[in-house]
Length: 178
Image 1 (cartoon, rainbow, N blue to C red):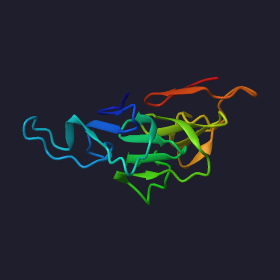
Image 2 (cartoon, helix red, strand yellow; image 1 turned 45 degrees about the horizontal axis):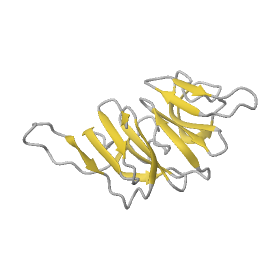
Image 3 (cartoon, rainbow, N blue to C red; image 1 turned 45 degrees about the vertical axis):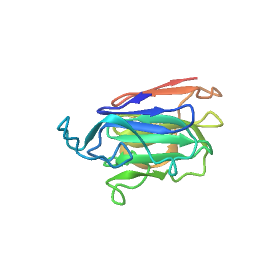
């Protein structure tokens, strides 16, 4: 289970992804209907299955500020939601927001992904960290500060030859475990 700002994702043992909460920016990755019982627009308080055809054999999920990410068995990351700071790994002028998961454009294969408020980080199978999105506080670990990075880039996380084991991220910061 991963809890974002106003939404959550869960992963079943069979690799299905469930989402619930706010979907104003498409971060649930599925269409929702206005729930008359709860009178909540752009939200779904009941967990619903995300189209498994789009996310075959999911292995890891992460809910961020207004976006979500899923890693599938082949090491591909699928992204959905708000992209105003390029947190989906695509240029802002190409995608502002989407409610349909799409694959992150990268040659790397990933085993883990974590979403912050407006940034995303991932760990590849070699133990290297990668990031995209808002970087005004240096939360991508690139060794520099910038407004945002629209393409996923190799982070300068880790000390020497230490590989990244896990990442934790919140609003505007990231912690790496080596």
